Amino acid sequence: MEAFRILDAIACPLPLSGIDTDQLIPARFMKRSRADGYGDYLLHDLRFDESGQPKPDFPLNASRWAGARVLVTRRNFGSGSSREAAVYALVDYGFACVIAPSFGDIFASNAVNNGLLPATVSEEDCEALLAGLEDGDGTARVDLEACEIRAANLVIPFRVDPVWRTKLLNGWDDIDLTLSHAATIEAFQAKDSSARPWLVPSVRAS
Image: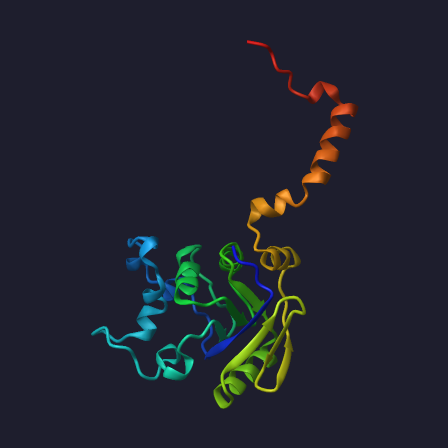
């Protein structure tokens, strides 16, 4: 994964609560190959009407939010089923960060494993940010090193699990995170093998 440190990007406000994973990508689109990309199906039933035409009043369809890489929304984002395809849809669409007061636990874990930052802010800061983006130029700076968002003349702190922050800052997956402790692991193995040699598997010659 690409390391995430500072992101300067268009930030799209989506003032909705409880957007679940089935809304992020309806199940009927999950039969399609990931190689073809899931971005076109992100929030499909909210973005498009029954005839497949974009709804003009939906934020992601507005020209001012075209190319947005930050999504700002309300509480309980990504609740519902554990489908990782919901994260695929966001990433394939182009998002690198979602800002909200709370996230579904499994969604947030899946997000980090795909390089997507789930930045948790207070309800008050979220509402201020949503309003500021509507009235301002719609850009934001997300600084993962400082855990800080700058947008619409606001400076807003955000929270992210420290282990997830380490993974994102370095572009690591779970295996990379484990390998970063290789020296400690090897030292423990050597000490434990000396203290309890009977636990070390013996290798018989064939």
